[in-house]
Image 1 (spheres, chains in turn yellow, green):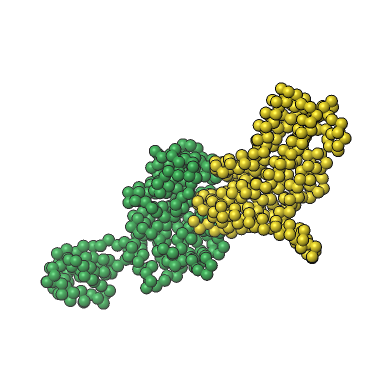
Image 2 (spheres, one colour; image 1 turned 30 degrees about the vertical axis):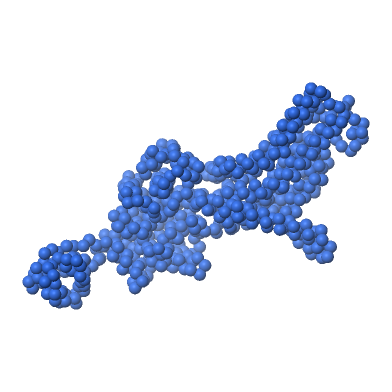
Length: 301
Length: 315
């Protein structure tokens, strides 16, 4: 166990000392970062001049859009960065010879692949958490604007907004946490997919291009098969159901994100739970396949 | 499960192919405990493949390997905990210092103290570079750090793949001294592959010679050299050369062979023939100016065993 912990920490240290990992953390969290600055400026302005009904409704929309935008952007660009981070942890290490240095020690192969996977997961969790912290900071500022309660002050609630089927609260911390967990779970499946690919390449760039091309190809097939070909033959619809990337679309759909933000859905809602279960199932399958490949892999240089 | 203890390594019927190319064919050999053993063979003989299987870089699929009494692959972890391995061109993390690298990689065996790390680094002569980044090391320094990593946990067995690869002559001498010191001070059994025969002959007391994936000879160096044909150089004046050859012809049935050399002849003969040949030459009136023994070397054995015409030994 101690050996495993050392291995995980070692892998995490290697990831965090790479420049592209830092760029990854910044790029993924660009929305919360910029929004924080913008909200602080807005707060200072509102504090000075006060705000009226129009400004409040704007604030509500801004916070909703902020979360939706961040989660969507994260889901779009995370694959590109994750492919590179996984590629560096596996493909580059085969190429540079770091892998042979690990494998001549008493660590077992399943420990190596598990530790690397956990380290990438922890890194992903860090990326998600940083975004989460900034979003919470944004919420904090927004709450300060709404007199520090998180709820819209009754006297400020315009009649028109009150009649709408929308909560009178800004985004709750629980909803934010649930969204961040979904982000983590969805990307975990991609981590498994990229690890499987990275075992066949010794260049992180080539591995990234290849795996992303396959991912895009699969997803294009899913879109065509489920929307068009399925109308010709139901067989295509059945086949499209096995395209793992469809769970990413489901998980990060705008309606799903807004549902959670507005409190209509939670992680335990059946539709969210089944998608999360599928994501974890695919992640486990990719991990097991990668383990089988890695246990027989020959390190030749 | 402990099965055998007298050999540090025992390999039986090891087979390995890359696609259709057979690299190791029923390979068998052993490495005695407390020895410095050399693993010799021409390029492509299968040395590196064998060492990679021993180190766990290539999965063992066909054959039996016992290291320090542990059967592979089941007992690999227990065996490797007591083994130091030095791969050819060690690849530590370039952005970390020598100390940091040994601390992290060493901790994968068991936690290691800074004192021991510095002691290992000092043993291989890298004291001044302990806090330099690995990326700034020369190839010789990298090789030395690889050895420092190999000995870090005071292993019972040290396996080295071409430890002097890429080193200059002074570096090779230094490496030889380092390995001898480790063997003497820490009682470590050493198994190293090399294609530098003189280096192996100076350092090793046991050798395994490999050719085309099979063991063609193994044994203690002293025993292998004792079985050699003796080689002598005799210095005689040119005018006596024809007369000398006539005398030598009388010994040809006993296996004597000769060839011309710059100031006389080179004789290859069975043991204890030199005094009789000298006596015969003198009696025939040949003026023998000098009779110089040529030291037997592993190179002769190696070339004889691994040349294309050589009969291939059975394991």
